[in-house]
Image (cartoon, rainbow, N blue to C red; front, side, top):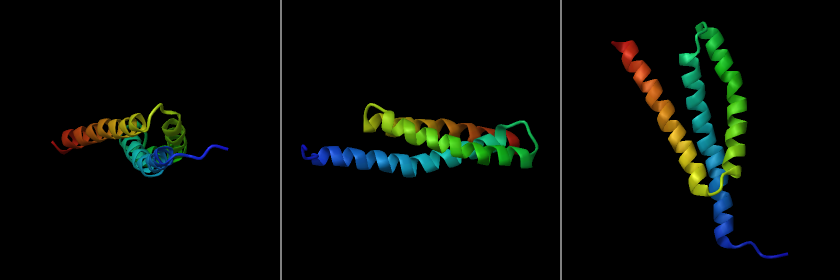
Length: 97
């Protein structure tokens, strides 16, 4: 069996970190956005967003390890978080005025 190179180990560690930490952050932000934007009562929107978070997290983890490069995996997570964060921020600005 061939020895694993340090760069390969680092790449796997970075993907694991992206899947665990980045996936959690993205899932939390997506759930928050869903709870705000779903056209349901507050309780139903919160419950739907919370239940959907399990599916979102699983899809993010799968996507991180399916991405061609580690940079692309991180870029997808960070880019999605920027878009969701901007949508939530804009909605809060509109609601405050």
